[in-house]
Length: 117
Length: 115
Image (cartoon, rainbow over all chains, first blue to last red; front, side):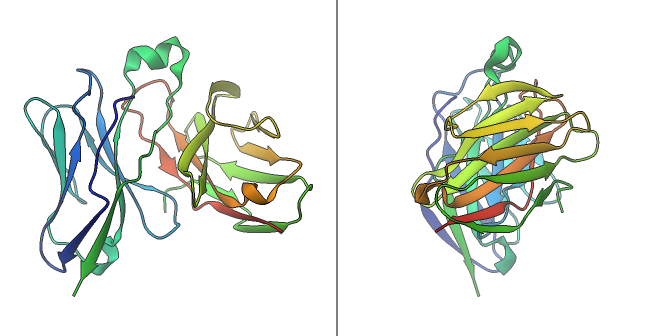
């Protein structure tokens, strides 16, 4: 799986946008970028994923650079409940999955986002 | 609520004992995954089952085993427990487990404490 690099921690004021960066310079052309978050020992929660186009859902937006070597997760109006560890994950390609590679998620150390008043 | 359920929530046991953790996937999901989260190792993939068959193995110890039953629920068996096995154990499920667009949804976890 492609390796990802994230800052260990970030702070954000409540009501402001939180922009969480992720570098994945070794990503392959058919590998997706996934974002999960984990709120204090709860199960990881799926946020969003994308391949090359920007994506938006009710939780967040995902901006992927044109060369796909980095991405940014945007929480448009962060609240205290968004305080969590955010994980950026690059998914193994479909070919590997079909040839028996499984479909695991490889978690790094993530970014601890702290939203403050 | 992800739709994935895990029991029990908490488990306290002694070294050398054996425990079974249970997971029920979301309705319609065929794949189940087990992950371990300890303080020093982070979230680590253990094993994946797809429609009753083992699909992939990660860093799962030989003392640990899992299975997926015909109704698709899964059990993770941990035996000869050691202090270092104390961790959070998460189960996740996904629709198929054969596509890299297959989103995994996680359960609330089982916190295992080995004394």
